[in-house]
Length: 223
Image: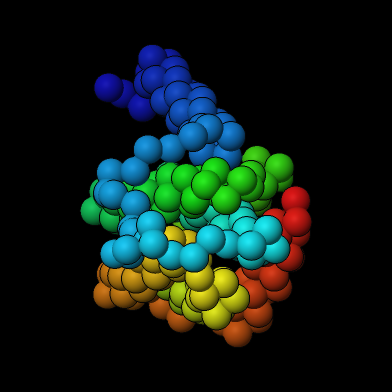
């Protein structure tokens, strides 16, 4: 089809509109919907024999798992925007595969929140929108910087999940098993992005990412 042909321009506009509609639909489903995992929820042996959690322990575990759920909402947004922003089919497939694995994390944290009598963050649409915008900016800089953004994000998430392993009640074996598997998956995502050519981000950018994560996790702990 000739690029000067009006039909070509119309096809491009329709394709862009379709992508926008699909992105909005994905955002709503991710931030407000429920999710189904493709892998079984991690469960330690004998979890049914674990001592019952106190009301205070349940509140703490629910708050931490809500923060983790928000992190997975943001991960979905980041991978969706980066898949949209790249023109490399192989890289797009890598981002989409990572997003599919992160969907398991969404389902697991949702399930655990229900078991603890907790809820997901009321600000999930806001978290998704902000993460999507950041991911799209990174994707538009270059594929290597987009991958570097993934590496840095996942390394920070790994540290964050390690801190939750220290904070979760010792008796909450169910939540701890989920967080441990999530951490292992995030490490694998970071390693894959690094091997694919991700470049280190400048120190000021890494610092801003940590600051943004601190604001998000502090807010999501309560709201």
